[in-house]
Length: 82
Image 1 (cartoon, one colour):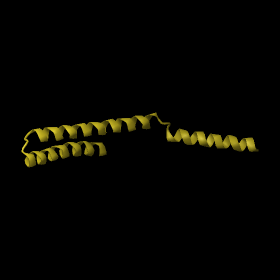
Image 2 (tube, rainbow, N blue to C red):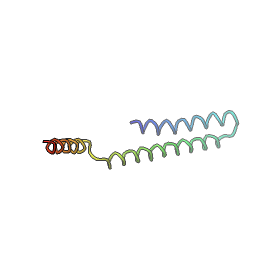
Image 3 (cartoon, one colour):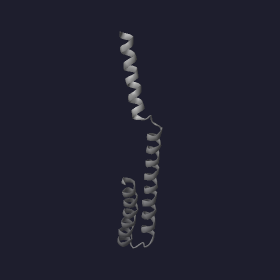
Image 4 (cartoon, rainbow, N blue to C red):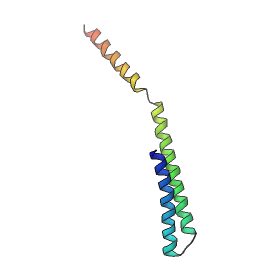
């Protein structure tokens, strides 16, 4: 959900800033096109960042497997100490 909000916000903000730029400097439609493109690129960057984070999480070990390994190591240490 955060990704979709960030994507939509980037594009809408780019469009709005472009509209304000064009109204202030009378450069229609170039300002809006430039800022809209910048917003689309920012949305694409957000997608890439989300993809990289998801890929990292999927490649990490399962938290339950890590807990099982830690418990097994602790049990082995106790057995060696006895």
